[in-house]
Length: 302
Image (cartoon, rainbow, N blue to C red; front, side, top):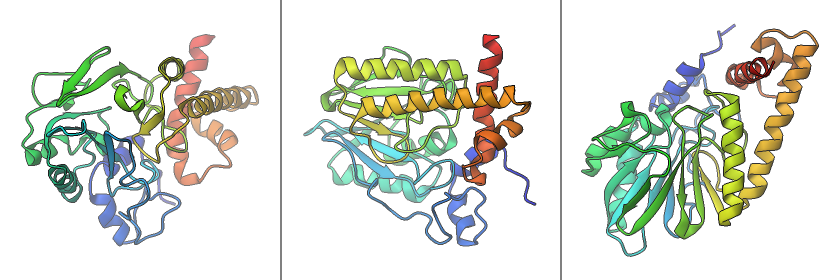
């Protein structure tokens, strides 16, 4: 029996081009459960979706951890010669060069790179991309992922080429997770805090994540957000409904975990076997990480 991969290994695989090569051999250990060997890197309706100012370029790294692949976002004001790229994606030269070429075909140059968080499938290719694009700045919350001296933090306003993006700290998926608000399009770019389908794995604290979801829900209602542009999966054109679903799902899962513990489950694995019995087993190692966050949250409340 193959030993389950750790979450760290799964993220690292998802952050390189190795998935595509492993898939050709039929041994991809984190293949998306809906994919079959030989289909790695297929484009979909997700590639090319967006808004007036935002265009998605789908990275060819579909897996159990990345859904259809990582969404790289090219953001630019109409008529501007400068673009912002959010989450260049994995260290996959073919994908990175494709993003650069699309920006060039738009008649623009990359003025700035932003990261929603530091997971390799979003950030591993950032510095190589900046070099290919002739860009000198990669901004992120975590200093380890920056290029240049500028970081990102709560309340920052990124203004370049006539474009305005507002920064919100939304920890939970990771401690360094950020959300970007594009007011001109009514778009919320959520990284992995909210996905186009399914639910996200938590590396941070569940309490932080629940607070981030509640905040995004309130914010989206207050500003009349029109769409969520996620880090994976299709865009969501009913942000309130999507966030309500996420909040309800997390609360329901938490209640199920609490019930499993009351019934005798003690370890994350034992909880997963009860609560996630209907989920594809290839996702169980990732589910264990989420369950650990839930158990920590329940222990902190007692």
